[in-house]
Image (cartoon, rainbow, N blue to C red; front, top):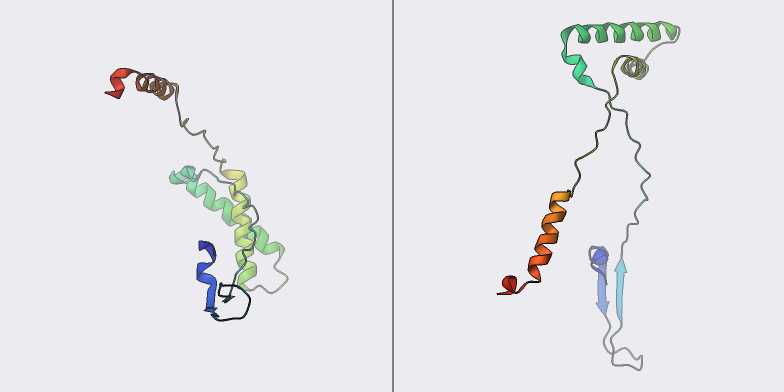
Length: 137
């Protein structure tokens, strides 16, 4: 049994003396196996630069924009009675729209290369030295 399924064994018994015409003992085991659900690809979220909000003037402009959007959305759907979920959806939509308009998106910067030319030169030098007699002694 592979190590992956060792924890799933519930009951395991051997039956020696069974008349099967062999010197082996039959083993009967009960297992409970949970199959994995394949996960779908996760969607990437759009990231906005929130450093702009650290400036007091910009933070105030942002707050005014969110408030105005929230009031507009709230007035548009004012004819129906509102529960807390509808209010939350309205506020969330106002914040998302304001983020798209006001905050710039964060551009992903390329990461530093893992292996540089300097490291490759050092590897070649090491390989060259490993073959020499001075390295072996």
